[in-house]
Image 1: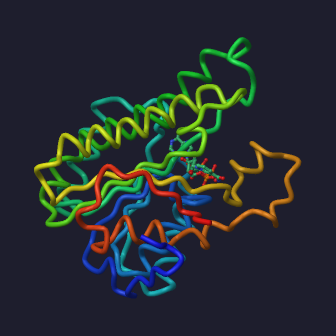
Image 2 (image 1 turned 90 degrees about the vertical axis):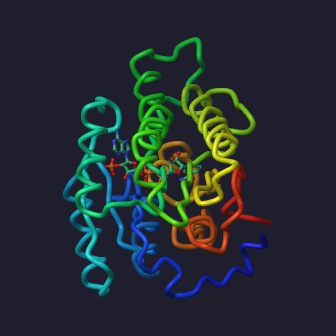
Length: 250
Ligand code: NAP
């Protein structure tokens, strides 16, 4: 698929219920607003309620479908909290048509020799354990959809390991594997697909933390990479599963 040529319909996601994790900032915020603009009812997950409320207001002001707010700290979520989350979404919507696993943290940009174990565990919990457990818990709701799409967020260092990317790189390799395994295990069920997206260098606070010397104006904005997020979430990618897609293509 040549994403530069991709022209999503304005009602691409009409009547779809889509959960976006880390929807309060950066790429997740842009994805939540974009999905709502294309007709979706968006479940806004994050850990900072004020940021989620601001996105909620923006969607309402733009005339989008009424979103929902789902606060949850992914570094320390218990299995009980996951099962309560499923009950909440079950009662409110009865099904789920998509998940964008976007929330993530960078951890340290230092050598493994010095890497602090507590940070390692936190990065693994947010970037890898949470997408696994959220997906596993929400499968019953995804199975209620006629066309469900699960998108995991990877990174360039999730495909090629690089020095001083530590737990972040290892977690993103894990995310690529997680997506591939789910896709293989659901190969006989074309109604649910699983893919990875690599946003590429994108102008957010995480990017600024990772590359403090970089001029942010030289980096793509979150809005500019949304065609890939729409393509993988909407019906145009039906039948595509187990792929790892670059949001920024040459
Ligand atoms: P960001 O601006 O830092 O946003 C990350 C989001 O994740 C925020 O909304 C944050 O919530 C949320 N989050 C972090 N820890 C959380 C936790 N423990 N529980 C719940 N939510 C949590 O980062 P971004 O650049 O948009 O990154 C989005 C995704 O793209 C990440 O998976 C990242 O690894 C990936 N990525 C980004 C780039 C890039 O260049 N930006 C490149 C490759 C991959 P708060 O706002 O409340 O902190």
